[in-house]
Amino acid sequence: MLGELLRRNEVLGWTAVAHGVLFLVALVLSQVDGRQLAGINLWIKPMKFAISIALYTATYGWIYHHAMAPGGAKALVSWVIAGTLCYETVCIFGQAARGVGSHFNVATGFDGFVFASMGVMIVINMLAALAGAWHCWQTSPTLGLTPAYLWGIRLGMLIFVLAGFEGGLMGSRLQHAVGVPDGGPGLPILNWSTEGGDLRVAHFVGMHALQALPLLGYWLGSVWTVWGAAAGWVGVTVWLLVRALAGRPLIG
Image (cartoon, rainbow, N blue to C red; front, side, top):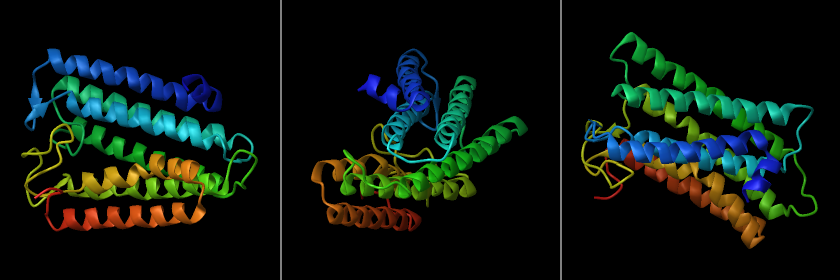
């Protein structure tokens, strides 16, 4: 599968591989560096972002292969996605090495610049992902690409981008928790708040439509099933967002 991914999109494929390696690096560092931030090991966030970016770029590279795009547009989208995510990774790992937070950290001028520049890069990333989604919406079903699979790709990409922009809500609030401070008791590994609302839940669920809906379309082969699943996915994501904004935890 790795060889096929690299054949389909070498740029995003190698970006996924690099972040898979970085996940392992952060995992090792979490075992040898006991420093904590907001009650958790400093390297947990780099671990989560590394594996998340690996999954994002691997999925996007795999399904974007099917898109029809003019000229070098596909290469441009791929390089912008890869470049902005690599910048994000450097910031997250760099701030962890310094022992400070990468997100919502405006304690110093440098920290504020890092956080603001990360926000700019993610906006650019989402715009590039949206351009790729547009290319997929312009693509017609072809041999080996069923209508259900194509609609899974289209809707998965669109919901992914919309959920990605929800991250701006967290940035504007300078925290992800609602009703309680960041860093309180949370679920294992994910660290989603168990005492108040947490905007990361809807963000996480919405963005994973990128994987779920194309898989549903590929396996089930029914356009109506894909549309129904997409509607349900949006409904659950909105419900989770409303619940978080009301200050209610996912569990409890």
